Image (cartoon, rainbow, N blue to C red; front, side, top):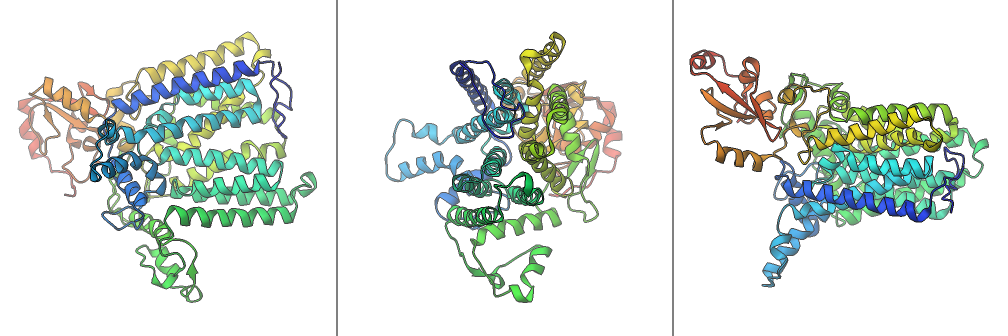
Length: 556
C-alpha cells in the first residue's frame, strides 16, 4: 500500500513513498509514546524553577476571571494559556472548599502535576512538526522529524515546565501550517482555521504578534506573483484578513474575560515611553479599544521592564556581564546565536545545514516561500526581535525557531531509500550522536550544552540564567548538602573550605544577592552538582587576600 502526499507544492513533487500506512502510524504512535515517557520522567525529577510559580498564579487569576496584571503581583509576560497548568491546583482548592477530599486531590495539588498540560503541548508540537515534514518532504522525513523532536534537549527541557514557551512554539508551528494550507487552497474552511490558530497563538506569548508580520509579507508576495497563484484573488485575501482580525479580537477578549473591552485609550494607565506617547496622540485619545485592558497592559509592562530592568537579572554571555539596570546596556546582539551554537546539539545543527542544502537544490521560489520560507521568516523575525531587546532570557524564548530547525533538518532525510550507503551512514551517525549527547545529560535537560563545551565544569563561562541555572536542581543540591554537611552553599562573603555556588551567583546574573565572581576569577571548580552548582575549594591561607578585594556591586 502506498502512502502518498497530495499537498500542492510538496518538495518531493507528489512522488509516493513506499511505506505501509499502518506501519507509518504505528511508528509515529510508538515515538510519541516513548517521547511522553521521557518527558514525564524529566518533569517528575526536576525541581520547581524560578518562573513556574508566577505562571501558575496568573493562570489561577485567569480561571477566576481576574486577568488584571497588577492584582496580587506583577504579571507582565504571563499569558492566559497558563490557565491549563493552573487548573489542577485550582480544582484541588475548589474541592477543599466544598469539603470533597477525593483520593487524587493531593496529587493534583503538586506543582509537578501542573506540568502535564505542557507535556501534552510538547507531544502536540511533535505531531505538528511531523505533519509539516510530511507535507513538505514525505513520510520518511516525517518519521525523522518526529525522532528529532523526541531527542531535542531544549524541547524536552522547556516542554516539561509549567511555563508558556512550549505553547508559543506550538502556536507558531500550527498557525503557520494552517496559513500555508490557506495559501495553497484559499477556501473558507482554511481561512477560518488559519485565522483561529493565529488568534490562539496570541495567548501563548507576546512575541506571537510577530506572526502577523510574516503573514503580511506572504500575502504581499502572493499579490506580486498573482499570475502564478490565480486562486489567491484580492477578494479572498481581504476576506482572510477580516477573518484573521475578527479571530484575533474574539480570542483575546474571551481569554481575558472581556475585561474593560472598549475602554477609551485615554483611560489606560501606561508606564513605558512608547505606550505613553501612543496614548497622548490627539486623534487616538478618545478611541475605544476593542481589546481587554490586560492585553495592552501586559505589552506596556513588558516594555517598561525592558526599559528599566526592573525585576530582571543581569544578562550574561561568554564571560561578559550586562547590567540590566544601566540605560547604556542594550543587550548582547550575538546572545541568541551563542545560545544556539552551544545549547543546540551539534548533530542537529549539521542536519539543519544539510536540510537547507537539500532545499536550495530542489525548491522553486514559489514553493519555497509558501513552504520553508514561512517557517524561516518566522524564525528570523523572532531572532531579530529578541537579539535587539535588552530583555534576553535564554534559549527558551527561541523554542519556535528550534522547532522550525527540526522541520528543515528533516529535509536531509528526503529520498533516504535511494541514497548512497555513505550518506545513509552519515545521517544515521548524526542521529546516534544526537541521542548519545542528550543521554549524557538526561534527565537534567535545562543545563544541556553540546560538545563545544569540553569541560562541563566550565559551562558557566558560556551562559547562565535559564540556559543553565533556573532553580531546577535544588532537590539534587539539597541531597548533596545532607551527605556533605561541611560544604557551604552560596556564602555571602569569602570563606575558606568547600564552597558550593550556583551559576547565577558565580557569574553575577543574580544581582539581588552578593556575587561570588571572585571564585570564578581565581579558582577552577572541582566538581558540579546538578550541572548548575559548582564546587570550589578555597585554602585558608587565601582568605585574607580574598577579603581584601573590593566587593562587586549588587542589589538587595
